Length: 411
Image 1 (cartoon, one colour):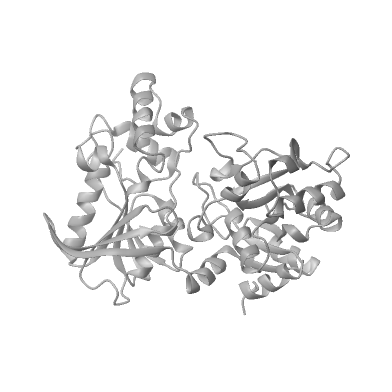
Image 2: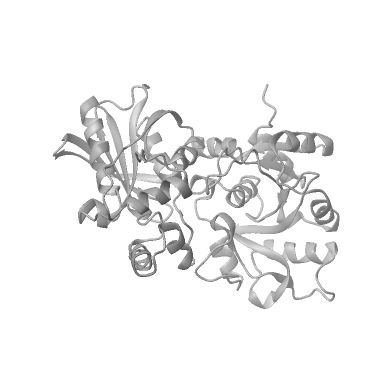
């Protein structure tokens, strides 16, 4: 029997005004560091009162946030605290607020509960808040955990599934030493306080059983230099982005399948740039698939520049060559994350094609983490070696040394 409760049990408790512990079971963080368990204490915001706010503050230990869809928060007159940038793990923190009717400082549990309920009110507008205050809203991405498997999105999804306003109150659970709590601690914490405990992985599986965020637009044979593939054109129902899947052979027979999740790189894939190894990886992946007569390449246009877009990528190139920055430093100098990619929609493409077990063609361990939360199992990682040149050798070293890539440099 699982140590965790079902999503259905957690939804019932949330709808009744109780809290749940929500666990992210990732093994590797975005920067390659180890993470075991990380959990948040969650409740629906519209039912928050002084007692619940006081409990979360005292027993969770992390900062308290109110999560909602960004469009909803902006309709309430709220703005990003850091325009053009984000918080930890690309979180979109808004400017902190107090409800206008708060007469004190806004810091007491009673006053924060009032502000939280006002944020959950769909009729609230900018005039109902003063900034800054003592409650920090945080914006969830459209599509929820099927787009980004984070606590912010998961808490909003759970509130929506509970049939209440899709606004949630959440705070990270810290252990006795003030560190992010591990899974064993979170299980004990939930048992001690009589709380249900569920995982984001199970929430993703729950949503995928009843929802779909991609739509097939076209399917046609496409001959290439590596043989004939079948190309599938999908459209994301979240943001309209295209996702292209090239398949060869029967990929829905249940056997482990070679898969390349390829981020668009106009400069490397189409223009032959020597500043990266992207084009070589794509060619190598297609060649390996053709050799086996079976496999999939998912080409993700929205991942250009590891998710920062073509123009920002070229600005980063400029900083690398004019100021000697490496690829991570250049992104940070632009106020952007080293890697902003998410594989949720791409995972849905693979799932829709009938894949369940993957032999992942990658040098990047983050891709494994980004896919395994979506009902896919990576049974093998197959490295894609590229031949370094004098223009990209530092880039490859940076990916190896700072981003955990296994790109098989001989040095």
